[in-house]
Length: 579
Image 1 (cartoon, helix red, strand yellow):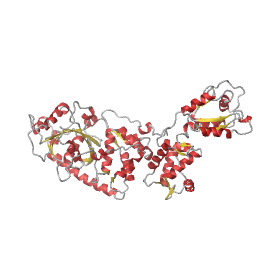
Image 2 (cartoon, helix red, strand yellow):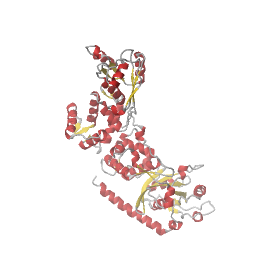
Image 3 (tube, rainbow, N blue to C red):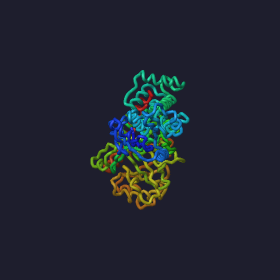
């Protein structure tokens, strides 16, 4: 729960109203015989305050009118205190209430007596409470309803807590919510009492013995109206909100250290959470998210995080909807390319709350340095990056789309990434393809940082191959990154390349595998064999060139990938059928 580190209470008022006496009576628990002109600032330790927050009390000796005006203009919460109640026999509340209603900054009014110690502790408790649990951001007293920002926050909290997405918080969900926010479940009778209160006040607050969104919002309105706004603040802060009802930056972006040459991946628990989110919103159980389902999923976000280009980045079904596999791939891509963005997204979904982890950082695996993997000739990584280089028009975009099972060119919402799963010797890996811009002067470190390089040329274009040779010689000839030459558009007549050596001779001279023929212009789904080769080279960069060129090697890899892909899909259908 995010809360202030301390509270500072300023006592202002005209001379002789008893400001200093109030402080002295609080500290000594008796009325002082001698009152100094002004009390020194005192600090009340956290362990003796109800809210467990250190509190500083300052005796401020200036005219009340000036101090009040300054405090009111700054938006600081105010408490009106009527001291010396021991000197009068009647209450002044009738006089004060109109003033309180006129100024929304005034949280409450208290009558007290420093001499009789009446309401002294209560006064400072209310002051502390006004700072830690202010009414202003939550509630509009004139309209007698919660403010829009508070409603928006509570709506997100309701959706996150509605684990089955049926629009109702059932008893299990209510108990989980209660335990999450207040560290204790509700007794069955207490739970029923809460629902009865809602039933008595509104007709649609309870449905199928569960709490609806309207009922949930009504309860919090009731808490605030009855002066229990600390309950609502506890809920808001548990779900990441700050005093301005914005998600706290520390909540969205927890600390995560990533050493150089290391990558970021989702761990097993994170994938399980994301699967549960997919299941929650895949209402028709078709293993894909329709535009309406996707919009419903991202309703807890302040903006739509996935644009139309995502449909050209991951696998979709025949209707163009993101499949379960595509959904997981996009999360994997975000984690790999921009882990801070991934942490932010998981924060909106309530990852740390639902999984009962300290923060979203618990969802991330930071891989070890790639140099260590090369030395040990083994890796535990699951995501591998392939950068694709080729002259303009050589077929890079078609190559990316064929990896997603498509053989048509993308006409709009082009994506320079494609990610999908691939099996390498029976192990499922994610292969991330990235199309690098062809009109570059110097490649950035990000464009050079990859696990395998794909040099792609158009066999029907005589000048296409030379571009690949320049890239290879300038950046990768002395690199340990494995490279593979792709002879694209192999369905077209092959032209003689305008280069001193043929593609086959060039590859032999530089000890890289021979050019691999490829075309996406087929009636059937494009073959994945070429992508198995790229993934295998990425996972095993230490392979000898003899292994890479061996037809038996590629046959074993391709057959293994096909077998495990079929078995994996069959197992997935078995698991998902009951849903």
